[in-house]
Length: 352
Image (cartoon, rainbow, N blue to C red; front, side, top):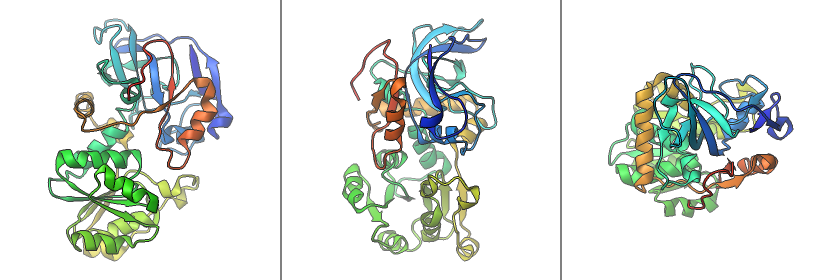
């Protein structure tokens, strides 16, 4: 089978190599999946660079998050799913937990507890992106912050994939969003998506605009994917008892020095207004959640996508051999399109 393998830690285009590898054999409780499509996430590239929350054992097959494919074989004494069934593989490594197979290969072995059946009505492009960004958006809004109908939710990086999904959830859940972007050109786009209010840090004061929009104490919940000075302003903008959940650090995207990954919080604001700033990492959620809870949450996401509540933008397909182009697209500013590695055996789908 074909696989895209990183021979060591480093820049992805320098260390990745297409290789031919034996097809793996599933053990009890496992299934062999014939992969059809798998995305390239920024986190996948950070793993290869050696600056993510866990380290790969090199040489390593790239891709550490999700894919869609069909069950090709089952391990001994494994009754379900059935051979030929179409499934999403939630390949997110649980922290703590055992290592999982990389998804940038034609076949991989996965625990059956990490497989979510999906119908043929859902395109490969959408199905292979179910288990990371839509799940993150749902967990942030509903479980991490439990945002109630009518409440304000302040979010940074509103134009990111997760940010757009949060806006889509807004109408379904009845919450109101204040959306922070860094480019004036993005403001109308976020409004058109359904964002209630938009703040552009290029030429607006975040604290002042939040207070003008919702009052000085009415915003108490926020999700932040930027960190740095913007993350600190988000915390300061919240009313007493406010909570910020930090799930990314886009302001330090290319930073390799851990000491530079900071949020300069104001102690007075935290102490006297009893605010909370905490992190969310999907890998640790997988490590803490039961297999049943994981599948329940994934099933909920699948239902939201099937019902049209959540819309996943169509990805751009690449064969493994064109990985330099795919990586370049994944890191292009404001690209808006997720690159996908695709394997041609099986259905060729164009529906988004």
